Amino acid sequence: MITHLSIDNFVLVEHLELSFSAGMQVLTGETGAGKSLIVGAIELIFGAQIRPGTLFDESRPAVLEGSFEIVNSNVTLQNLLRRYDIPTEENELFVRREIQTNLRSKSFINGRRIANAIVKEFGSAMLDFHSQRDQQKLFDPAYQLQMLDRYAGLTAEVEAFGTAFSQLNQLIATLHKARKREAALAEKQELYRYQAEELTALGLHPGEDEALQGELELLNNAEDILTLAQESAETLMEQENSAFDRISSLLEHWQRYQDASPSIAAVVSHLQDTLAHLEDAVSASNSLMETIDVDVERLEQVEARLDAINTMKSKFRKNLPELLEYLAEVEAELDAFASHKNETAALEKAVETATEKVLHQAYVLSKKRRKGAKEFEKVVMENICQLAIPDAQVKILFDKDSHFEKEMYSLMDITETGADTIEYYFSANKGVRMQPLRVAASGGELSRFLLTLKKVLSDKLAQRLIVFDEIDSGIGGKTAELLGNFIHAISHDHQVLCISHLPQIAACADQHFVIRKERSSKATVIVVDAVADEQRREEIARMLSGSTSELALQHAAEILEKKEAKS
Image 1 (spheres, one colour):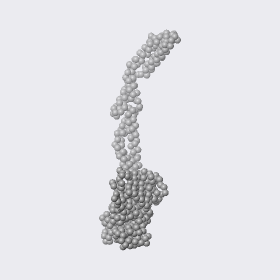
Image 2 (tube, helix red, strand yellow):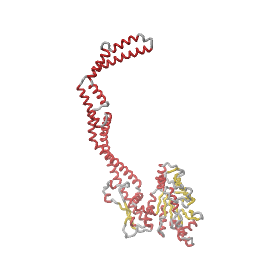
Image 3 (cartoon, one colour):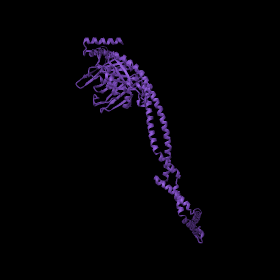
Image 4 (cartoon, helix red, strand yellow):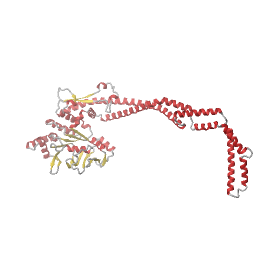
């Protein structure tokens, strides 16, 4: 509920402060006085688009602020406050929008800077705008269905269905991806299986090709290596006057003088090391002679093995480490294929189960809607008859009656709101067959139909501010009085702000504001006055006849007295 509105430097307003009460607030004034400016300010506070001409004085910013009482029963509002961690004190919400001279703006809720999209969420939870252009909503089957669901108390159930439907679509999308991935893998399975068998059969080992290449080198040169080993052993140690003998003789001579000089001692040490190395060389040569054979059969085996490995390298264009890595990858793909098949099977089962659940939910939802539609038709007809359409007939037609009885829905029939598409049928006159509302209703009838829906649904909505912006166009006389009573009835459940040019509606107000323009040599500004008693009687007289003549004042007094007597 709005309690206070502050407007500074906005359109034709230099500065304006308004306080509101509960119940029905009415704004009246001459044509062109700027009655819709107040509504426009509230819309801007909650994120509406800023247009050129917004600033009264283009040299300084505009500031719009509304104070609202937080309604505990408004669950959506409470959830928004928690979600965005908005601090609240004394159960009040202050929504502020600052519009700079370049028409860029900043929004704040309780002093915290808030993105415009979030401010709009709060607006949706706290406000309900109703204007002549909203009549077009009545032609939208989705809006018609939304109204029926709200009346039948199915809003939460529809939201739950939408969640289940969304989850089903996500499951189906995941299944499609899994099938696509499985199909792509299936195309490669035969190749992967053949390659895995071929590489596995070869029995490759890390470093095997290098080891075989070394062995091949030995086997190819076995005779020369054995001859060289024999010659080395003989030359170095075995034959007379061998290298070992000659170095040993030199060592004996040097050892006599090794204490005489460090340099001589170094010579002795090096010669001793040389003898030790010669012994090692001879030992290694002897070992070669014992281990190397001229083995033609082994040579053929090594050559064949290397040839097989090199053929595989050439075929796959990979070296041995890369071949082993590729084999691991192929085996992993083969394992993954089996896993993907299991995953796909599980997804298919999950989709089947979820589909059955969603289709059944859609059937149950349809059943409840049909029951609610019969009650809704009756209540709407009863109320619209009170707005001077006594012979009104209303019918809600469903598009799937033939399928419904047998619960034969398929996913092709389902959207996020269920399986139903409906259309309101209407006739305003006795003996005239009902047709779709978009065809059968005039502008005035549409306005009254929409207002009827607001009244019928008012006690089913969380408490909020409902704004009626000149919905009484083309209405007068007794119908205007009925319309005023209707709007006042809505204000029992919600705060109402109504812009009107009808005295019968203004007389129903709990608080009455008059908007007028004041002109000076410098500028034209809008002034808003809260009126009561004599001032209110004069305004209603003006609305009745365009003057404050004695007759008009008497008529205005009669209207006000009649309303006071009823209340």
